Image (tube, rainbow over all chains, first blue to last red; front, side, top):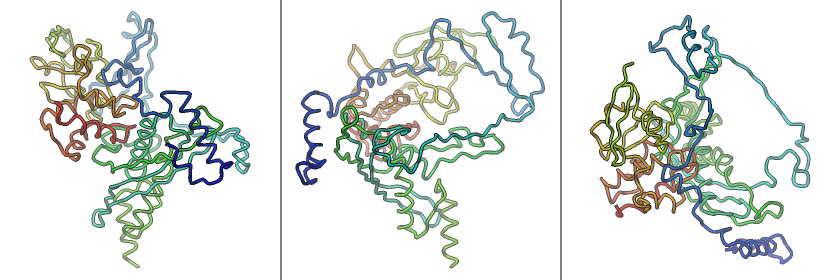
Length: 278
Length: 155
C-alpha cells in the first residue's frame, strides 16, 4: 500500500513520515483509503436524487420563459396586462426588445504578493498544498484532414492521501474529458457583440464516449500533513496538463506546434501548409 | 390550447393524464407524474439526459410528444429496481463508481439496459458507440464503459 514511499530513503525524511501517517489513518478508520461505493450513488442510480430543477417546495416561486410562437419574428411590443391580472403571478420581466444584449466587462485580482514563498505563506490560496501531476498523451493526427484523435492517456497524480481511490480515479478520468479532449481539441465560445453564437449543445461540442482515449490513471501515494486525512485535490491533473501533453504529442507526430486552443482541424491544416511552404 | 385526456403506461402502471397536445413526454413525466429521474439537459435533443425507453428502445423524451407515447410501454429509471432488488445495470454502475454528479446516470443506465438486451456480448467499441448519444461531463466515460462491460452477459 505504501511501497511508493520506500524509495524515499532516509528514515527521518518525508517519505518515512508518509508511511507512518498512512498507517495511522488506515488503522483509525475502516473506510478511509478503501475503494468504497459512494453513499449517494444508490439514490442517483434509482432516480430518487433531486437536482434543483426537480424540487418543489411550499411557497416556491416558479419561472416560465415564454417565447414567440412565430419563428424569426421581430418583437415590437409585449402586452402583459392579462398576465398581471392572473392570480399568483408575482413578477413579469420582459427581455430587451431593441436587440442589444446587456454587456459588461470586469476583472478582479486579489491583493496577494505573487512572488512570495507560497508554502509557508498560503494566504489567498484556494488549496492548502500544491498537488503534482504528470501526463503522457498519445495522439493520431490525420495530415489530410487535420483531425486529431487522442488514443491513449497515462498519467500520475500526487493527490495526497486518496480517501477513496475509486472516486479519485473518476476525477482523473473526468479531467481528461473536460480539460483534455474537450478544452484542448473541441470546446470554444464564439462571440459576436455579447451574443454567444454557439450557445447550444448542437454547436458547442463536448467530448462523447467515442472521443475518449484509453485512460490509465496512476495515484501517487502521499500524505499532506496539514489537511484532513492528508488529502490534497484530485481534479486539476488533466485540466492543467493535457494542453501541453496533447500539444507536444501533435508536434511529435507531425512536427508543428499549435499554440492556440482548441486545436481544431483547420489550425492543424494551416500549420502543416505553412511548414510545407518552407 | 385545448386540453386532452390521454393514457400512458409508465413502468407497468397505467396513468390518465390531462395534457395539452404540445406537451413533450419529458414535461409530462416530470411535471404531471413527478418522475424526476428523467432529467432535462439541453431540451433540444443534443445531450441525451432525457432518455427514456419506449417499447424497450431509448428515445429522447424532450423530442417526443406525450401523445406519441400512448399505447406504448414507457420505462424510466424509477421502474428498473423491482422488489427492492436493483437491476444488474444499476448495481454495476454503483459498484464501478460510474456515478459522479448523477445527472446523466438515469439516461446512461436506461441506454445500457436497452443496448445490452439487444447485444449481450458487445466489444468495448460497440459499448462506447451505444452511449455516444448521452453526454457525461464528469466521469470521462471510463467507469461507465467498465460498468457496461461488467454487466454484459448478465441480462
